[in-house]
Length: 166
Image (cartoon, one colour):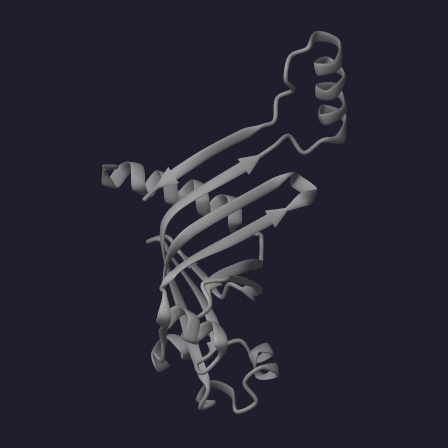
């Protein structure tokens, strides 16, 4: 079991990796036990291991989360060869205080009645585990690694890969 210091350090590393990636692919399990993914814009990433999204309270994804709370969030930043997978448990909530706190006027595209829209809800994802791949982002480094591998038979440095348990 990780102690609180390790958990805090792991969360800091994870949030440092995903802080500039605005959209994650949220994967849920539908009623037919089929995985479904869709892009979601994170509204807040908390240092306590919670990520918040707006959702339609009566949407398919909300129904899927109520059916099975296990979710996955996939983040990618191909320009930096950075990829992150986050596993956790999700809840669908109607918390007016949190809605007011996270509200952004751009959300009226999905919620025409604003913060008081009858279908507005929140998805709260509490992180359990994460894994990331952070490869060298320079094309020159990649090319050098491929040439070195071809000449020496050694595998190129693929960068850093780590599993994080919270």
